[in-house]
View 1 (cartoon, one colour):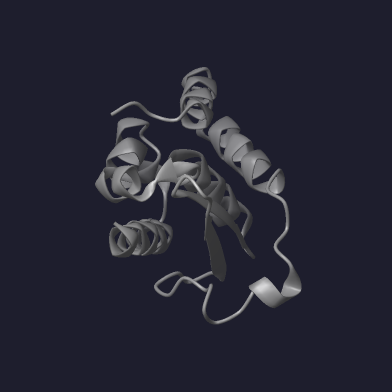
View 2 (cartoon, one colour):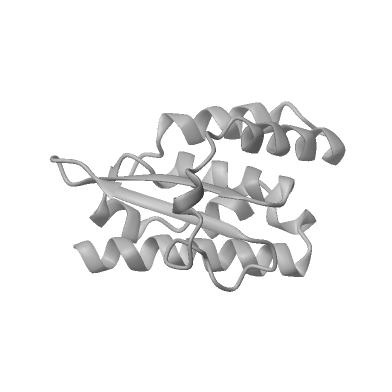
Length: 138
């Protein structure tokens, strides 16, 4: 299974950054580039449980049965992680999403090793939410 180009671009950009402060700054920039959700979308139904910070994910399905994700967080780093997850999962069929292990991709990039335990647990909660929603649509 090939990875989406948006994720490959992020992975390539991260490969040029050796310093973790630069990597964090890049992740924050990714999050800042996300369009804001509408206030009414920041609701209990869209909230991801298991994250210490507040995270909301909104999904929709197009007529070709591809899922599209939007999201945000009140924490800068977490918002960047949301942006990376959107790059991995958005605009793909539910079957591909259900089979894609973003945690393994984060590990390949060495991103999780510098996250706090709470952020890492929140990342797992976001991935589980996305994959279980996709599995329900298969």
